[in-house]
Amino acid sequence: MGNKTKHVPQRTCIVCRKKKAKRELNRLVVMDNKVLWDEFYKLPGRGAYVCKSANCIIKLENFRNLQKTFRKKTVELKKETIKSMMEKTSDYGDKNGF
Image 1 (cartoon, rainbow, N blue to C red):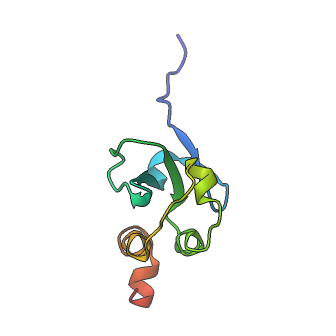
Image 2: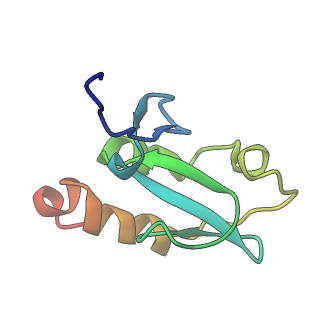
């Protein structure tokens, strides 16, 4: 019998295009044409993933392909969503008081 290892789902960051384990990325979903941060990976709907690095989260604000990523005509990403991700998942908030 072979050595069994548990499968770890891989996802791609929509900003930097790097592949990482699913839990190493922030998940975003669209509800009512608003992009929400799915902190607990439980919300229904099409998801997109972003690295937990401050660099990718900051670039997300100017990312122009959200409509294509979520297959929607209009998508709104609020600054509060980005700020929340920065404070809770990256080391940027600790260093810069974000």
